[in-house]
Amino acid sequence: MHDEHFPGLRRRGFLAATGAASLGALALTGCGGSGGEGSDAKGDGTPKRGGRLRAAFAGGGAAETLDPHLANLFADAARAKALFDKLADYGADLSAQPRLAEKWEPNKTLDRWQVTLREATFHDGGPVTAADVLYSYRRIADPGRAFRAKASLEPIDLDASRATGRRSIEFVLKRPTAEFPNILAAFGAYIIPENAGEAAGFGTGPIGSGPFRFVSFTPGRSAVFRRHDAYWEGAPHLDELEFVVANEESARVNALLGGQVEYAHELHPATARAHEGKGRIEIVRLRGSAMQGFAMKTDRAPFDDRRVREAFFLIADREELVAGALSGAGVIGNDLFGKGYEYYADGLPQREQDLDRARALLKRAGAENLKVTLDTSQAAAGFTEAAGIFRDQAKRAGVTIDVRTGGKDTYWADILDNGTLCSYRSGAMPIEAHISQRLLTDSTTNATKWRHKDFDALYRQAQSTRDPADRAAVYARMQRRLYTEGGFVVWGFADWILGTSPAVRGVETEAPANTLHWARFDKVWLA
Image (tube, helix red, strand yellow):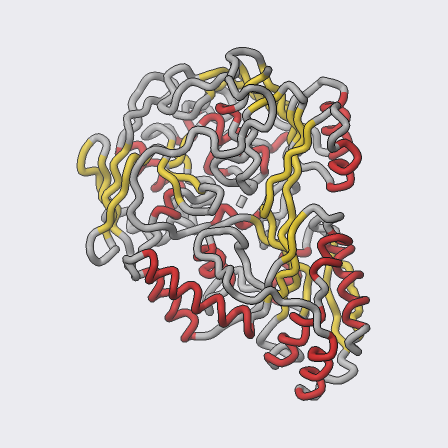
């Protein structure tokens, strides 16, 4: 969900970029997981049936909707996940896992994919069919609407794609795409009944195929859902699920402490430190949920000189940044996106601070006594703290950094094309999606202005490479280049922090935010 927000994606609580993935992992079959490893850290692990779980999220006020194709906020995404299904979703390593799609298989040229649906029913008892899938995707792709997954579905030629049976679809693509399953897993690509459209009653009685069915909804306040007994993966353990809107973190924490809710989303590291191990609430840390770093614009001085960029890689003391800006709630980075994700180049040496080499590189670049402005904002947790720490680190290398703090509401639009150096964050998404969105010549959210035709060609090669090992080798080659001369100083990966009542069981502890097992309440129960 998918902050790393650029124009139109600025509402509070949304963990950006996850949702704009547009490609994925080659032919994959089988069922999706039912709860993930490490999902029960307490108790005997035997689920109990019954009860209502109340979950507190930051919300979006009176404009909130249950239309899954409009989901932007974390609260939207969690409600959509409870009511609806996608054909696929992202596993903990950000690879695509089957959901309503039972299997998928490409042709030899990777420009046509056959998708077979599993047997599943909507809440009104009707079957989920190929016609429903094509209707949903065509609705999302409507040029007159601003649905979240529209860009993700762009590679599909929806006019040429067709149902080949009640539960089978031939997707025709505009170009060879080895990782087509990532399109099926895209943020917001939910399936609704054919011809539902605005008549689906997204505020008064939406029909989905998810694990819970609609009971009531008051925008900006609460939503109540009840167990869908005929859910294809098995009925939820809970009788009911209620989403409660609490915009301030303090309100979510107090509600949890006071017993008004059993689950609180998006807690601060300081809150986690204050309550962890004390017994009143349980703290859950979703590791690797958000890349943290600085973006250097490679098309303008001083960062059009790769020696200056390398010097900035070497200025960063990553341990100090994680400890100071994230209060230790994260791990250090290595100037590459996607630590722990599929295709991540984990064999590269861990970069460490080397101020002597940084000074030497700056001298060779004619950039001694360099002065540069670092744009930052309160738009994301830890941004201003990281900017101050990095400023002090740079001073020891002879670099003067002027920290300029911008507005929260306009920050992501302001820094996309302006300035030379800025604080940056990105949410969980497949590495190939990060490349396609952020690092190609025509990428619309290319904050580092990394534009290299040979790099674009490598991406196209990876996309058209059938063998996963060969494709991984191409991605490794691309990442080695970014590690050497790219524009992102990736100093860390932040935890995403949740709080639960001690009575809550089954909350997944391994999945980054916005992946399949994040906010997945059908596998949760009350002890």
